Image (cartoon, rainbow, N blue to C red):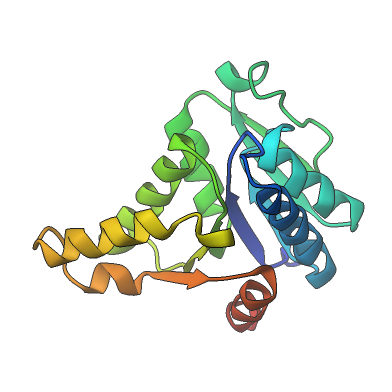
Length: 186
């Protein structure tokens, strides 16, 4: 049995967002993962940034692993033509399957769902349930307010400064590719 490729869990919006740079970054991430021979693990949607990253990965011949809960199949238009397509019962099970099938996490612009996924991965890292790197792709400063909030959480004593060490902020897809490559090496 062949070894699985290095797998990257991507959290991102089911909408494109207001800035065209978000869609471009999503497509660039999908294309980069395919070009590197890395597997995309994501929420199996065929809309918004989720659909863009998956279609770009597929266009580049990449391996795609999608996970979607049954109740979102129609709402998010589940992308069933993936290399691996898994339907779960619940959102919590979806997040667990995604995280456990990846060696790194990348967060693109997104909404409440992306924040939920990020904070679960961050909390699990803080609790020692995994040691996977978590990268935030800060396209055009999208996540600046979140980063300021995290600084405030630490400054106000609600988390140790080590919390911030679990996140790596990257400005663009080229920087992301370089950092992921460091983790993809055996």
